[in-house]
Length: 118
Image 1 (cartoon, rainbow, N blue to C red):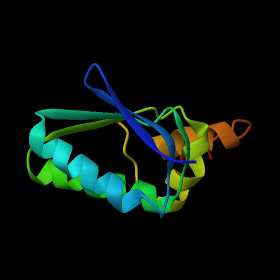
Image 2: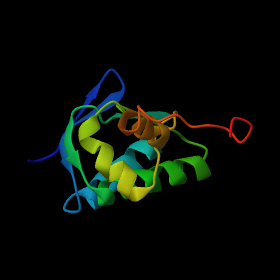
Image 3: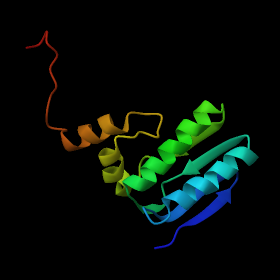
Image 4: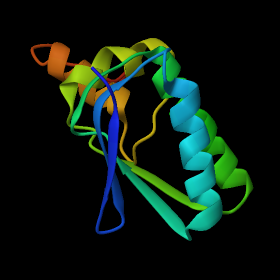
């Protein structure tokens, strides 16, 4: 599937796939947007898939924005189609602990005890 990017009320909505084949172009596109706009918000909730290359492209953007004092935010962490890419990359683009949330989903029947409880 191709990738479409729509700007709706200042939020960039991504629809389709971000993969090895287009991750570099996506990164370059948003590098330009970071230069042109005071803030960039990218919504990943409508993506059909993303691989590790896509996650790394977004991590690079986040690091670049941070170094340059730019505002870059990602939304759409509830898109479970992207879960494997995030877990395999080790990158977290969101304000909450994506990895902890994923672990709780998969291990919801386990109880974690502190040393005091052991």
